[in-house]
Amino acid sequence: MCQTRVVVRRGDREEEIMREVVALRVEPEEVILQAFFEEPRRVRGKIREIDFMKHVVVLEEEA
Image (cartoon, rainbow, N blue to C red; front, side):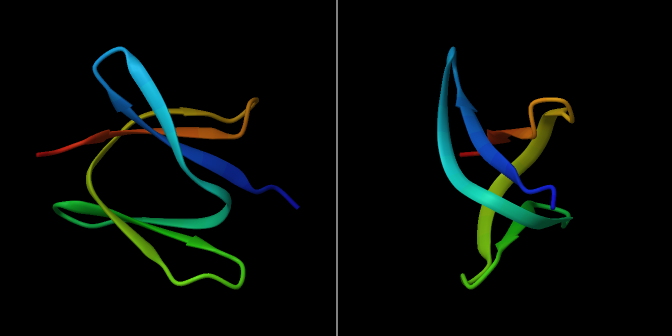
């Protein structure tokens, strides 16, 4: 299986917010993350970068 981890970029720092994400849905003002056996997590922001080799999605959080 290919799960990924999701980090939020804040300035020059990155903070991991979720591991083993199996689904990601982009809505107009938020990104919805889903992992096995967990409630979906909603993050106000947008996708900045996806690295398929490292299994990382970088989000930029909106205020």
